[in-house]
Length: 198
Image 1: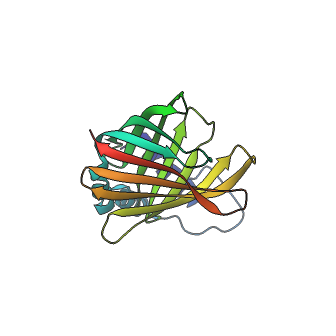
Image 2: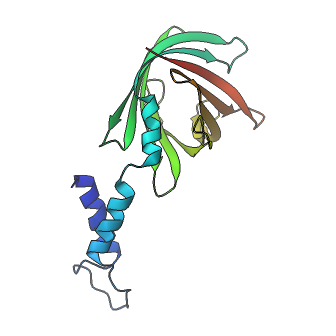
Image 3: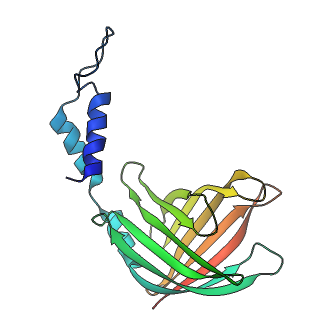
């Protein structure tokens, strides 16, 4: 069993009163059955239908980006790879390209949280010291994933609402769109990236 799973189970046992190292004069609830707890963790740790759905992203991609956040939209190209990690529980995305003449690279994780019943992701890159996270749901036909989160904004120094969308155009192409909060407090589309299978 993975180390992180063991640490989570140990923490849960402590919270449930399953460890004898802490004594208190107050009454506590009965400790949860250890085997039942382990079974619950295993159930929610298993990749399922939603993880298999994400398999369509696996592979190498060429990208064309359009930055829409300024009064002079700019375009750039790049390349990206999606690979399964952690036993098929998360996709690891790596990205390399350019942004307004500067080298750009980033990476992130994308998966499905069985407990929240939502798609989840996090992202970091060389143009920020922030960790961006978001979560969302998939359309009934499986072609669109809508996500929302909060993005640190360097102009205001605040964390502001944002959202994004992944939509499949066909089996070998999908579109990523992002919306940020503007000075008026409203969301505006800031970025489009077209991914074409390499």
